[in-house]
Image (tube, rainbow, N blue to C red; front, side, top):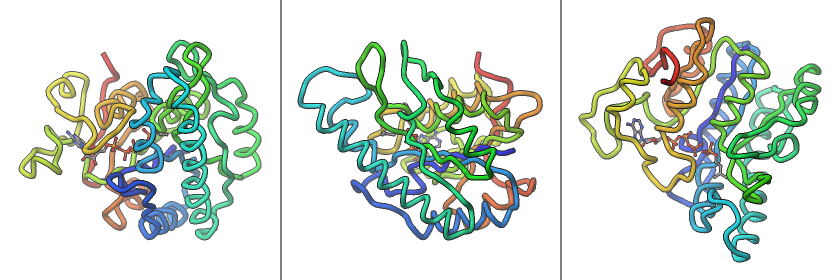
Length: 259
Ligand code: ATP
Ligand code: IP8
């Protein structure tokens, strides 16, 4: 099976609070359906999650009562985004349900703990895709925190043991520098721990979960001899479909684990 994260950079406009890229999501859902592959999708927050989380420093946990309405608002906005993604999956003919990560995960000592795996497993055994997403989640020591879609990918990798993990974003892969601000930057077909040290890469806009660097670290941790971990551009029509069908496409593959 294949795990796919639809990144916030491709499903939303990360520079405009709560802007959903419906046409792109609709196309990506059709590409996934047409591939005929057995997949589970996770999605990121984009401008439905990062804007308020950053404004109220929700990633740092509880620091003051002014954060409390923002925790509720981020959960609200993320559910709205998730239901819009689910709508497009259903329209594409993929039975899918919303699984807010707080319903089965808790954060403990900075780690995401899957304490109720039967919720996701019951859905997937029935042929229904449980769709999780980056969100504000309760934390045993910091009261709450932000769980990213990339962390969920790692947790689901442990649960399902996929043979491929695909991270869909709005760039062709990992570059030496952010291609949006450095147009001549070189695309890396493969990334290792050593190469990642030479890469510069926060998010292109406000991002509370570590941007492309944290994503590459998660991808490197997920690598295994029998598993391919790839970063691919979902803004280019047909590219995700081709990758799912096993064709070689422009992308970055993580190799060799995180050292
Ligand atoms: P989200 O975290 O909201 O789900 P995402 O998973 O799509 O979003 P981002 O964390 O936004 O991914 O990372 C992708 C962004 O990182 C790109 O839009 C790109 O502009 C930016 N970026 C910064 N540095 C680099 C780099 N060296 N190579 C590639 N992209 C980079
Ligand atoms: O977009 C973070 O998840 P990500 C979600 O996968 C929020 O990094 C709520 C900021």
